[in-house]
Structure formats: structure tokens, C-alpha cells
Amino acid sequence: MVKKHSKKYLAAAEKIDHSKKYSLVDAATLVKDISFTNFDSNVEVVFDLNVDTTKADQQLRGAIVLPNGSGNPKTVVVFADGEKAKDATQAGADFVGTDDLIQKVQSGWTDFDVAIATPDQMAKVGRVGRALGPKGLMPNPKEGTVTMDVTKAVSDAKGGQVTYRTDKNGNVAVPVGKVSFDSDKLAENIKSVSSTILGARPSTVKGTYVLSAHLASTMGPGVELDVSSL
Image (cartoon, rainbow, N blue to C red; front, top):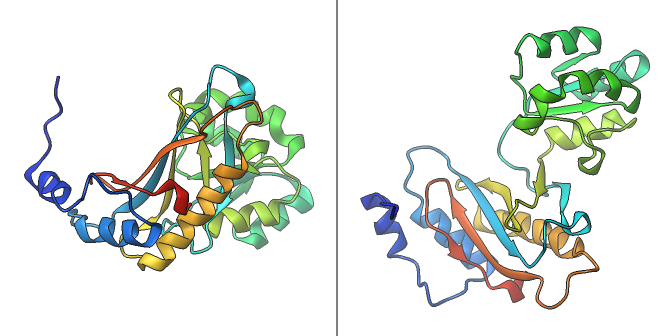
């Protein structure tokens, strides 16, 4: 079935020169200009990578703290006790606990954006893996959310940290801000993400690594980026 787009989407798409690949600032400026939602849309960059995700060493996963933040406030939960619980509270975590939080999640509560745990709590957190995993909330050391340094983890989460991982087709989609951001700030965030993705190139990948990259706002058409500008 051919997907039908709205008139607003088609009108926005007409403003894109599809024969052109845009620089970071030009792409950010254009995406801001053609956004047509009546709310402050998210802006996302998507990389199409030449990776084979059936191979474990070519699966990318990690976290990035955007220099200008994501524009999306995060509700942060920390599974910790003792001094680490105090550290998490002082760092600004919204909910801190152990068995009480586990029980709350078991009862169906997942009204938060980021879950952090100290390593000693992971056996307990594993009991709610079925609830957290499908929502992308399971603490993971690759994303810096299984750590003894809960102060840094909470600070990063509150300060604009975003996560990334390859999907089964080798695409990586990462939020980089809002359409209300200045173009220069969006471009700086995109540059930070692209540097991380480029730096994470698996050693076993041969030939071209980034096949293409596009920038788009919520519900809007994609603008192709000039990969050489990344």
C-alpha cells in the first residue's frame, strides 16, 4: 500500500531540493522552516549505516550528552540504596529506591524516561526486565545507566543525554533538539551525534560506513545531509 501524505507534508516537501545534499546549518534552518505542527516538534537525525546487525560487533548502542540539550525534560528513576541513593537524590533524580520501586514497577508503573541502577541492584531490577525492556527503560552499562557514579548519570540524563542504537536495518535515529532551537545549536548537536556515530565505526565494516543521513522534524519530510560535512 502506498502511503498517503497530508497536504501540509506535501507542501513542506516541495520546499526541499531533493537533488541537493544540505550542510548541517542549512539543513537545520530548512527543517525549522518547513515544520508544520502546532507544537514544538522534535528534530531527529537518521543515519543509514553499512553495518550487518546480525553480527554482534556491528551493533551500535550508546549514549550522548547533547551540548545544547534535547529540549525534552526527563523523569529519572534510580535503583540504589545507602550513600548512592543519597547521591542520586542530591543530583536531582525524581524517584530513588530499591524494593519499593521494584514493587511499583511490578504493579504497572513505568511513568519515567530514564532508569539508572547501581550494579549491585541489577539482580533485583532484572525481575522487572519484561516491563522495562520493551519500553527501552532497562538500565544498560553501554548507555551509562548501570554505574556506581549515579551523580554523573543523573546529571547527564537531566542535562540532555540521548541514547542511540542500530535497528535491524542498520539505521540509527537520534533526537537532536526542537524546532524552536536556533539553527546553530541544532547543527552543534547534530555534529556531536555524528562525531559519536563516526567514532563508533566497527572495525569489521568495509567500504563506505555512512550510506546517507537525513534530518527531519516530527511528522515532517526528511532533508538529506551532506555526509562530508559531518
